Length: 210
Image 1 (tube, rainbow, N blue to C red):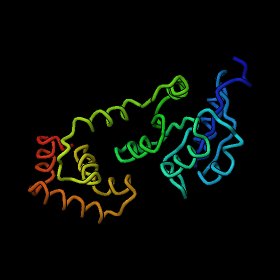
Image 2: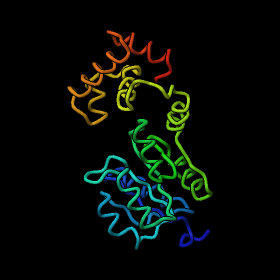
Image 3: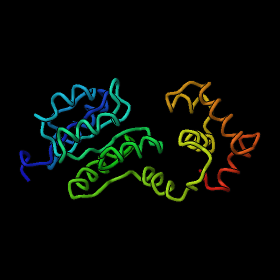
Image 4: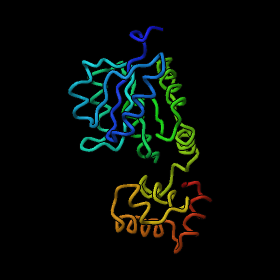
């Protein structure tokens, strides 16, 4: 395949080191070419039509307009362009929001360059690539009790608690106040009629809420 006939990519990522790193590694591969990269969604949306990419690697946590907000705007401009989410945030809310808005796949930044290149090729061949941990989230959601009394956010927080995360860590990771996390946990305890972290996890797992 000639370089000029290769798969054309645009990267939208606010971290300059990551953005440049991916550009360099992708361009080093014969069949792929990064035609442009942007640090925010607003700038990308203004120019991406001229870039005419086959695939866009889109970060979720961008300054200003978030990646999930940008998906539908990009798809409106470039309906045939595939969007692969590339992020460190693999919580259920983000995954399903991205996929429901039209993302073609969901990868995490911890994936190897080889895995990302394979995912780009896979999406061009009609597939829907996902990192293993993302696929687990999707599969797990189908096994959950659909009659859970917990909201999506409460479920997400309880899953983080079950994974051993502290309240402050959860707050930081989910971009919410510590007091908000505490309030959610209080509501979880009330809904599950428990009084401790261990009982909340046990009750939720027994009833397949998490």
